[in-house]
Image (tube, rainbow, N blue to C red; front, side, top):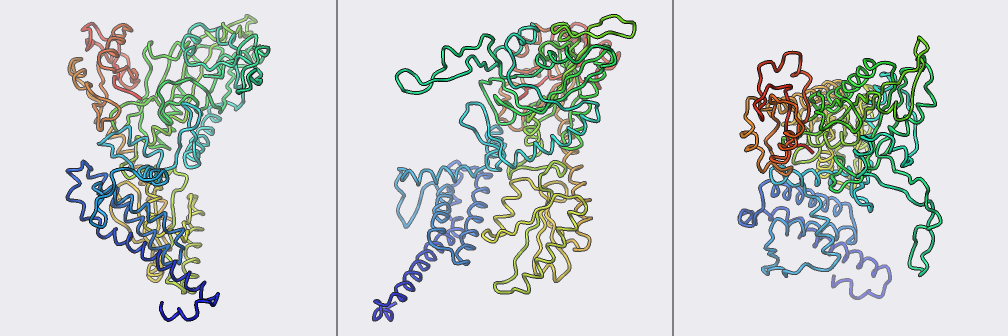
Length: 633
């Protein structure tokens, strides 16, 4: 730089020196950080003694490599120091995570955490990790939801913000199920969010079941507090009949049914609504159990008990088909024990899914309500002979809990695994750019990508082209793998020259190796490959379900197996199919002794005569059912 000193007064020269110095500094700083991606392996020998698991170490290695690639790409593109420096800080923080002794320049780092900004950066880096299932299954689930952008906590206790990637999954479920519901004969409607407390009190069992979960609106106006410190409920605006934020809509809908039903010609009446509900929860998990959640609730009225029961069973099958055909989740169809029935129902039918840790998840229910709600709200109809009769009812619903089931059935330590039929993006195309300044080469790539994109779309696939020029390909691969996209297609100059593209599946029996596929056949091969992946995921989950159900076991053996079987364990004890005499008191004792509940009486195992000669595994008396016991979310 000495040769420039004699003209430092020239303003253009000042600018040139500033730009040179800034780039030199950023490049030197970046090179130091990028070189660390090569040398960080020196710290591996101390990992075991520092308590870093192999899975976490592998995650760190990948994060460090991808962050280094991102920095190098930005540097080569002429990025300024202001852009590069924060990424370098993240890379150095990642390296520190891998080597907590903090060796830097031959000196140990200060044991104190740095500035507030540095602490935040460290916390943000930590948030990129996915805990291994074998380390803590519950933490894995929470981590996965966060890092894949499905949802995050809201300022309101117990409620979540569903982010676009998560909402797109719910949209796909809703669209598929809405078609099934309409084919079932129900029509969509909408009912108020607020329900008079007096309505809820009309059905005794129903109010007992929901009383402790209700959020109550007692005033219709706020005003400034006398001392000016904030807002208070206006004492003069207290409601005569407090309003309940709906926990479910049976009472409101049956109130309306009384207006709509007069004759047998009005039956059956079937309505459905897509809505949010509020059930105040003390312990919450995203998607599985939150105070507010999204769902659909169907409500029907019938002239006969047989018609109502058939309706409830039919919707159970619709829910099972949705899970198995779209979500690739095998389920056990069954009936709940009297203790586990929906409040106010005479029978509750359920589909139960198995999560990877061996716990069950109730994934959808339909209820035969008998005549209880019809009588409570005085809903009658005139039959063909002119007599007034009470109607028979059902209700049925599934919620965003299905997304929790989807996550825990298929995903792995690398992130989400999405069955192709539910995935918002089924195929992501990642173009590999031509060399710098090769405009002709880039034009050829763009044309090939556009053609491939059109071919895939024409066959009905949901496709995205990731042409972000500020990310290296490795970072893109990492992101889409975490998000669970079923198929990635890479295409670059060399591939086009050979007339091929490269397939990489996220999971299934074709996931281990990349495949070279002819460009002219890529779209049809993608369709067949995604169908095969859908089948792979379902079959793997089905085998896991079958292998996790234990039979021919004593109560003491089950109790021993379930000791310490917590949600964080992976894999867990699984489920137990046993002969059982229906007894609410014994059911309660088992729940207290080993935290297991009756998930259902499986329909396939409770045909006529199925328990003849069987003795209850708990009390030793004649069995009334085969019951499926287990821990559950």
